[in-house]
Length: 159
Image 1 (tube, one colour):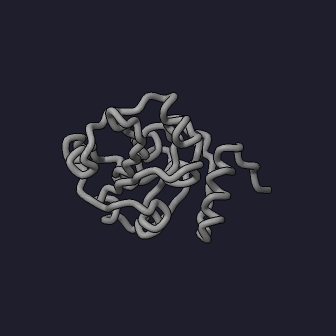
Image 2 (cartoon, helix red, strand yellow):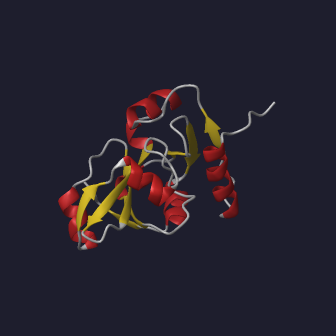
Image 3 (tube, one colour):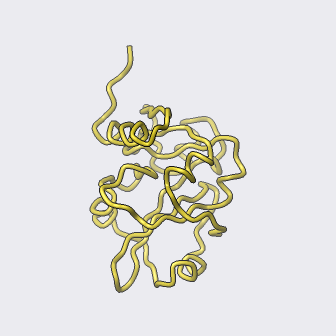
């Protein structure tokens, strides 16, 4: 018997289907809020986890999504050079307003409006990767090529 997904996870599942992707969202009993927790819950390398990080430009207040390998730390100065704006880490309220999801469950898809997206090129080194799916317990497995297609972002070195 299939378990019913929570509303946020269902929203991500629907977004994936609307994109023509046959990827399956699963909700796990263990937390996937951080890259380390997700890797432990899934049984994969931390680098295979897609961290969805929202930054806010200053002074415009525009959202920028960085999809980073769980093993990497974003070089914010390099990011500023790419988007030609000063950035700051977004607070929880801004993240929810821009994405419709809470920190710890922000997926790479399913937003109400397009968000400028940067993809960590290191994610392309893995055969499969895992992304958040709307809650701190929901994830889905995908190929790096699927991530590039669905996120419609620029692939670059972010560390």
